[in-house]
Length: 116
Image (cartoon, rainbow, N blue to C red; front, side):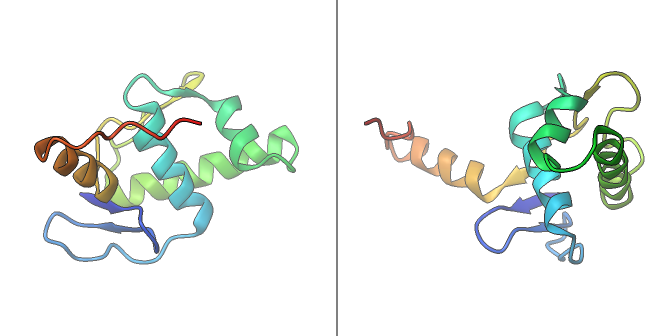
């Protein structure tokens, strides 16, 4: 799988076919899990506070559960950790951002963020 993050975000299959449109929050959840969480995961409460700050905790938890279900539908049943207090992807998606970072490293470019 390959995830385009540069506008507009889109998930592609290994054959390069778009995986269909997804709601913005589900894309945001997938991006966050892929770039920030990895296999170690992120606390469910942290994700809810980040993506659904205006909802009650229970509604935010339901929204997270729906988003994770959609990710499992798109990537496979074993794509996301199940249960527990942390959520993480069990597979890493290649992204255009990581492709650009790798290209910069190959060319000897400084890929650290600007300071100041």
